[in-house]
Amino acid sequence: MKPTPVSTPAMACGELLAATTVTAAAAVPTRAYVRSPAGAPRNSRSKPIKNDNANASATSANTARVNHDWSARRRILYRHPPVGVLDGKVAIVTGAGRGIGRAEALALAREGASVVVNDLGTALDGTSEASPAQQVVDEISAAGGRAATNDDDVASWDGAQRLIESTVDHFGRLDILVNNAGVLRDSMSFKMDEETWDAVIRVHLKGHFAPSRFAAEHWREQSKAGNDAGGRIINTASEAGLYGGTAQANYVAAKAGIAGMTIGLARELKNYGVTVNAIAPRARTRMTETVLGDFGAPTENGFDEWDPENIGPVVAWLASDAAADVTGQVFVVFGGRLHLMEGWTMVGEIEQGERWSVEAIAARKAELFGERRSGAPRMGFGR
Figure 1 (spheres, rainbow, N blue to C red):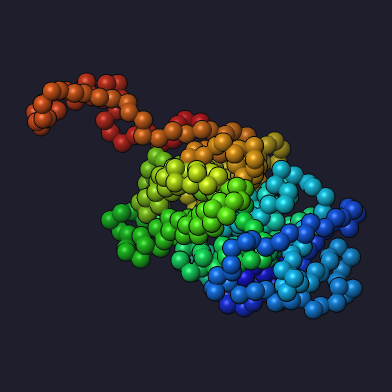
Figure 2 (cartoon, rainbow, N blue to C red):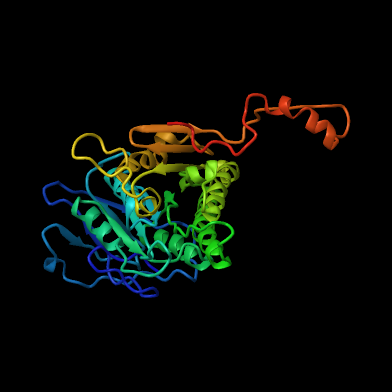
């Protein structure tokens, strides 16, 4: 659906946006940035946002309601002085209603980006619940930023396409895509049913690829039209995917797939000025609480290493021009630590000048493994 204005509660899927609200801190002098829409013609799937005929004088002192003049094809995107490294940029964060996604949306907004807060409003098991996306939008608005809600299903082709197209149609551009949406349905492999496997693969892996696919198409069209602004994709992997977790083969497969896909997309999109990176965050969320329980609970004093807010600045950096040369990388993020990862490096080798036999391999097994264990690799890297 269309991004929902900050002044109204989230709409049901399929409703059109009735108004756009631009919010600015009252104490800060403002100036308007006026931009023409993207040059590419609007897809038939993407309907224009209805004009806002509300009386601006009826709004609060901190809110300016702006009518969009679609006939003149003008958009007033933001009213505020430059505030950060992402000023004037537009970002989408999926699964941004809570936890890490919420922290990422807030961090991007603090750096000046307009943010589309995508969230279906689902529990960990995939069942529906009240969406918290509007609360995140309200937080951004209260701080003087600009944001809108969206409840499209990013794991569906049509939903992902609507998300990208409506963002470009509404804000006039797209610069940053943060893929974060996910669910958790842990089970031992010998007890896992097909629906449990499919649900996690669908939301995580397909839910990362589908928005990336349509964002990449948009940026490629922009590049061919002479716009070299490029774009940023930041994916969400997991150490479970990098090292293999227990009782969550579906989640492990999805997250490992995301890490591999990140590198593949980075190679594909480099010629269009698009960078693609992934983070494997450690933070206290609804997902980690099911596994870790009270471990990592905040203490009264000291730095909270497990606070989801620790993840946001890393994503903002990857989305900024300062990381324009960083692509195809995977980072583990925890507290004040940022770990650069590199996977599947050769660690042993044996060779002979003819085809191997079972007996020949068995005879040189110790040479192949050396001092390394031949059982399952250790989980994590000890930090």
